[in-house]
Image (tube, rainbow, N blue to C red; front, side, top):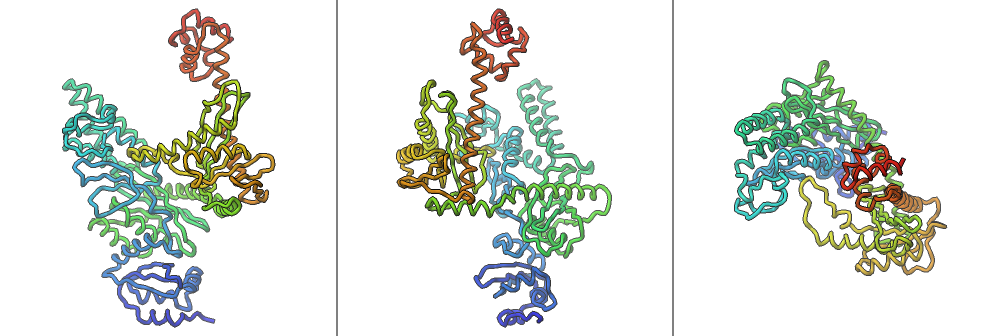
Length: 628
């Protein structure tokens, strides 16, 4: 039986205009499930409901459509802009979506300010008058880039109002990461010239900037201003570090973007190579979702407006691997985005440009494999585990953030507490921490007191962090964030006794109502909860039980690793203790000089040993004899 649209949809189809515009298809809940653009709304929208349209995606989609809304615009290029903005805002279920595009970081140069700051941002505003560079694929890459650029072009990170009349500059001036316009050392013109150089490097014009700085360095050196020459030399070296990631592609000095694609049944990866002034300055990967029943050309055609609607630096040429649908409309729209300057979509068949497309394709394949390996960590299983734990342990919220503490001791010495963190069921290794326990004697062990010290220090860090709201400098990590975040579940490796210690510490910090806590005993994997006499037993093969065991085992592994490192260090020191004449100070100096390597000390020549402060020739000879 051939398809017939519902009466409500047919009434809409009969009244559609022939104007260009955007259409939004809605389900019975009022949710937008698909957004498209059209040169002729009537023809385009009606095509979805023709009996001959049997594309699987269309068949699935129209089963859910109960309403259609339209937006009439003046031209097809305006429709393309509106479509990209609406897709970005609503992320409809059936549209090809650039996954998590709103989270990609940019570099913003606040050029509207008298003394512009340079920062990382994840919010862009095309109309605020500032300069944006990006998007980049990771915040870590942006922070590393900003750290390097600041060495070359010191920029402000403070909140001072710059008048040039402050009494003193901050530490950043002393370490040459700020020109100190606050005290008048650097004028506004000099500061803005430095910021202009920074922006030119981000644009890929590094060769020209280095030539200018090199010429200036030679001039000041000839004038015997060697301090200024050394400063310029250091800045040139910092820019060259940036250039190490900007590979020379062409001697022509071309500005091009190269796009290519890799895909499988579930998703696709668009690879973008950004070439400015003949150098590859960026290689970024963008995953696409909802790709079923879409051809490669349609996928790239869908990505183009989503990406270039939000970017700020469009080149005159965009190289793509195949002819795109509605290429003329895309070129017209790109020209508008570039403020009237021409943009060409090129499909190379041979030569260097074709090789660049092949390079992008190879990179896209590798990035797709890596992304899917990370993305496919069985999200469903992790969600099931957290739901089971929430139910079994009577938690107010799913344990999205779990902190687990374990104590490791060897014969009463070198006691270490470890903290591991799991976020959404996976290890957050950057937040692992160790606590060297100080509150117990070296000739005994007390796991309860060790746990008390570790948890007290952890939650004191929380108190300190919430009272220290100062934002980190651009390019610097927020080291307080790991302490500022409270766990959804505090897991203690131990039974009732260890749990009781944790409860006491939480009560002391008035956090017992805010931090759910549980103790995981080793013998039968039973879980103890505060105020419950009997333990909770999770089914042994349940996902929740597996997650608790993974967290506990990871905490134990991390503690043992830390403890082993301490033992090795102590072992090296103990071997030196048998050498007469070697006290704590000389032992420490020797270990420091030879990177804690006792074998390196044993193999060292007499002159190498006597180079260590406090080591005489006689003592060096004794070390050689007694360590042989």
